[in-house]
Length: 558
Image 1 (cartoon, rainbow, N blue to C red):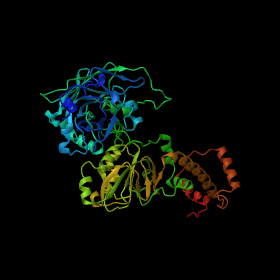
Image 2: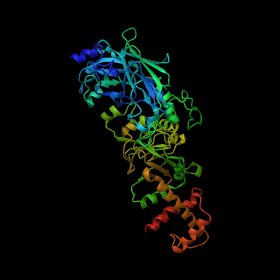
Image 3: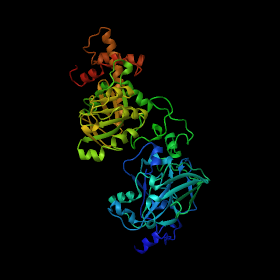
Image 4: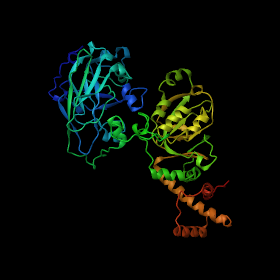
């Protein structure tokens, strides 16, 4: 080892005069933090990652033991996360797992503070929510990693003297050495770099005046000592002219406090039963996919009132002819209006690739992409599955349909098959598929990846697209024009309902359908006298809309 590495391993403070880095050999070049790594935390959140994921924190966020952290003015959700911090001692580039721990020189305590009021704004990057000054206390002293088996390490956190976090590295989903080896695949870890390895269950919200202490040790052996941080109240608000403002909602409160109960919120109702949802199962406790817009109640109501045929006509007028998911039909028969499987929501995408035995062995089992999507689908989202139009096996069954329904999903669309079709139909969530098939997924498909642009039934679908389905099929609407399209479709429905009334009175369709100038004038006069209320038409009145749009486009109506 070189002199710097020896200093790290021995726990010698750095030579920097900056007191923030007193516990480190020097100011770290990189601080890499893991999103979710402990089984206890994953169980608390109700989602377990298949692979580790990361974010960077600036070295300017480092603070020493005994420092204060400011909760900014206008915010409420400053949360602590006690963690094991690894300090790299020698450069690591593409190191194998068996050698990864040799590149760790020091181990100490860290507190990965986060401001949940800014979490949604950051959409996973955590630049603002976790990058503030003082948001990464580290110390007070380093343990020699050479003398420690990584699984023996323990992290504990106290809030105002009460023990609130207590777990060991043996309880991690991803071993500490794996984090080093994985990161070294992507960039060189250099001496002095710090890896924050995630927090166990028990993280919660702090208030001004609270004292948070974190300790990393080997039970009965060496200890980092307690890393002490005091929370103080800031007075400076964020400037709305410079960037987005903090905003706390019940979703972020539940995530920051650890549960809805801890946040003082009423238990979330299960969409399937109306009863309080069990821990980890509530859609309110897991954020929607990053970047996926949530439909407002007013827009959703309008989309539910318009038939897919009317929306399709308006999309065609705007030059969008390839937005229909072909070959899928509702699993539940629309044998009465109240049973019609109307589907409205925003897309959450999942892609299957053709089955190849070696790839199914590596990607088909365990917590695969399919299970992760159904565990994470949010309220009002539609799981859209690319199965290449191959209905030769199931792409979901009743268990996954129940999970999606319990999460508050708006529906499921797959251009593949559905297994246990009768049981899936009985769940009550709208499901559109290419048909039923008794075979399991692995006969035809490998669940590969999610939350990306896919092809389903010949249509391109992106996360966040608006998905609408009825007995005629399913259409994909770009989110940025959804309001425009549905308003135009509602207007056309009003017009067609008025035409249907005139035809029922005995008027010929010539000149009326589509309307000539004379009939148009009469329609405008009637509309001013008695404005139509969109969405209150019967299903028989809405039928002419696609034919009217086709006539106006110079096509033959059928």
